[in-house]
Image (tube, rainbow, N blue to C red):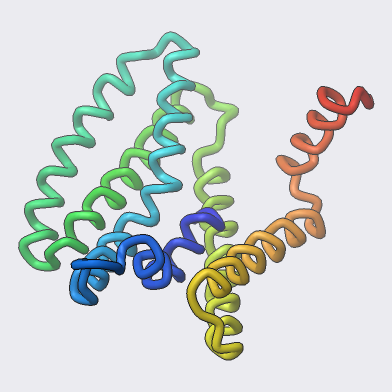
Length: 195
């Protein structure tokens, strides 16, 4: 998962309280929305990847693959939503969306590897898992520190998002992440006129 998805997951209760809990919006309603947000957080990552992978097939003029996978994903969502929402309610419904997007990401990654043999689906999925675990670790640590410091509301949200993103970004710098280096070089070249 991305740092944003992790941050949303660990701060769902504070976010819901800050945005919704006023007037006739009750604590029970807040709990339901926070539960839905928990199930939906992985979708932040997976839907972006589905879009990126689908666009790769369009660029390769292999539109039959997303034309099959995307509708199949809709059918999978309806089946998963029926099954999971009957057992887990609103959490099951949003979890069905995340699971479906995850399956579509996996399926499109494998299909892209078949079309482009030099593309390694296992490498991409491995990196996603590794960086997701790293983001989750930082999110968990930030949530614990925020609780220990007795931070609440906007202060807690600002602290945790700053901590998660800073730790994640610093780690990418320390491990000399290739993608981060490419982005840095592109920014220098395009915006600052440096080669």
